[in-house]
Image (cartoon, rainbow, N blue to C red):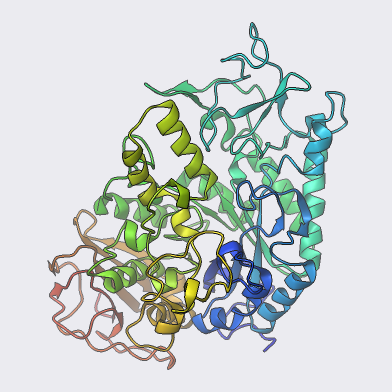
Length: 591
C-alpha cells in the first residue's frame, strides 16, 4: 500500500493537493486509547482505517505539542515535544507511517504568531529587560503619563480576541507584553531575525521527521506595524480595534517568501502549506496563493462564516442570508479562478456545527447535512472535513456555563455578565449557538457510553444524541451521512471536472436555490440544492432535465451519460421541483 492513490498527481507535482480531501483531527476530542478522557495519538492510530475508508487524502492534526493547554494546545511551550496527554514522538512516527502506508499524508498545525508564556523563549524574555531574548516578544512601557497598572496605562488600546486588553502587565519589570489572544499566549516579534531563524529551524526539523506540510494558525498576524498605533473604538466598545495595524502587516509577504525559501525550497518532495488568515481579502489571497510568488498553497478565509454574526458580533448570531452566502462563496470562486486556490470548509475547531448553523438539524437533519456538503464539495478548491462532520454531528444543548471549556467562551461570559451586566440567559443563548465548544465535544464512534470515545470520564461532555448519531450506525448503511460523504469524496477522486472545471454561478439572487455549473472541455456538471425546508420550483435557467435517475454506486467508477444524476440525497423524482434540502448533481453535454 505504499503507492499514493490512483488518480493523484505524483508526489513531486507542486499542486498534488488539488485532488485531495483534507480531514481535520482535533486530537483531544477524536479518540481516547487509554481511558483518561482525553483523545490521543494512539486513539488516532486506531482510526486510520476509518479515515482511509472515508476516502481521506490528508490529515490535518491540530496541535499536539507540549502545552499548558490554556487554549487547548494552541499555546505551545515546546515545539519539538509531544504533550504527554497525547502520547510520544514515537507514537506520532507510527501515525505518520500508518498514513503513508495507505497513501495518505499528515499536515501539522503550526502556531508561530505566539507561544505559551511557559515556553523557554518567553521565560527568558520575561526574566529581565536586559535579557538576550527580550525583543523576541513585544514589550512596551506604560502609556506616557500613566503608572504601570493604572486603568488606561496599556501601551495601546487594542482589545484581545479573547476579551479584555491585548496587553498584560509584568509586575517585575513594570512593562507590558502583547497578547492578541490569551494572556498566556504572548505574541512573537517577527521583526527580530533570530526569531524567524529559530522558527524556520524548527519547521525543517518537522519536515525531516516525515510530515507533509503545515497548516499555519493566524499566519497573517505575524507582521505588525512596529509603531503599534491605537485602534478605533466602536460606540459602546471597551477596547480599540488594532486589526488594521497587525493583520497583513507591512512585511507579511517578505516573511512568507523567506519562510518558503528557508524551509521548503531544495527539498526532494512537495509539501502543503495552508495559511489561516482572519480578515483576508480576495485581492490579498491572490497574492498569498499565487504559485509564482512562492508563499502559500491556499488560505483559510472567514468571510462566509461571518455572515451569521449579528450587530454585536459572533455572540449575537442571526439567521444566515442565503443570497449573501452564495455571493460570498461565488466571489471567492471567481476571484481565485485564474491564480491561487480555494480552501472549502464549513466546519473546523473554531466554528459551530454547520448542520445546526446553516441547515435544519431537526426534521431535515440528513437532507440539510448532505445538501450543504454537496454545494461545498462540488466547488473548485480543496475540501476540508472536520471530525464528526461526516456523521452530521450537531451543536450541543449546553445547559449552563459549567459545561463550557473554551477560554474564548468563558472570557466572553465573564466580561458580558460581570462587566457589561448583560442578562445571563441572553449571554448563554448566544454561546450555545456560537461557542467553539460546539465543535470540540468528542466524536461519536458508537452508542456505547460516552459514544465510544473513552472508557473514562471525557474532558468535556459528549453530546447527548450520540446514540442516534454515531459512526457505527452509519458506516456501510446506504442513506447515511457518512456514506454520502464517501460518495462525494469518491466523485472528486474520479472526476477531473470536479477538480479542475470552471465554476459558473446560476440564479445568484434566488433566496433558497444554490445552483452552479462546473465545466471542463465538453463535460458539464449542474449542481443544484434547495437550502430551505420548503419545496422549490426549479427555474428554467437551471438545466436539470426531467427525471432524477438513481445515482451510480460510488465504488464503480464510470462516465455518466448525458442527463444522468451523478449524486443526489433523495430518491428519484421530478427535477422541476426540489424537495426540502434536496441536492443533486447532473451531468450534461447540452450547452
